[in-house]
Length: 238
Image (cartoon, rainbow, N blue to C red; front, side):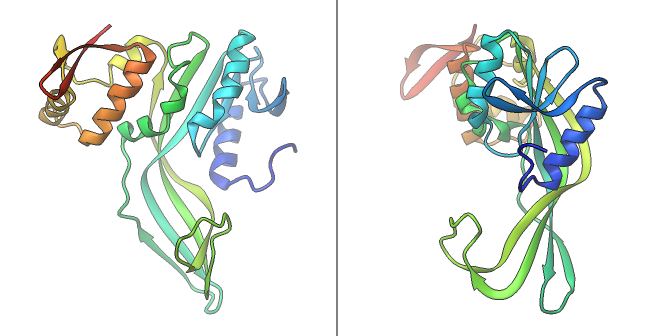
């Protein structure tokens, strides 16, 4: 099949799952100059993206310009386990990673997609998953396969697989994005005020994530800057 070299178990599993749930769909189909993960019977495109979402902008723009619906499915690892196989001993160990992501973590990934977030042909589906990251420990210090390690380690990543699938969130149109804001969002607000409202409603979000949300929403036209009060920018919903 086209474009399946080095495909992760996580990506392959989700691709097959979404294809099975869409009768008449086909996987790895040419779409203009691109290869689509899934093309549904009506010509709509589904892309499973486990990496940087912004890298799909050109493919999305091609679909939109040709009036084809495109949905990006982003598996958000809200829970991660690390499974390490030791080549010398043959033993396998497993531990839970302290790293945690939440729904608002996605805003770091979609900064490059703001021009199309509200386009009628575009949908973003965030799928909460528990994953297992597979590693192989050789016992010898080595560089990572992508050559990006600052310090050598004795293990390398082999891939990721799904442990469990949780909630999913469909983002399409203004109303869906507004639902991610606190219920008590006032007519105008600063980033700090919005953060405090999130916290008061029991939402797990950091101040940095609030700043990213505001940046994306401003660029997408969901909110607008209205004035400056002291050192704070004040915004309102559009």
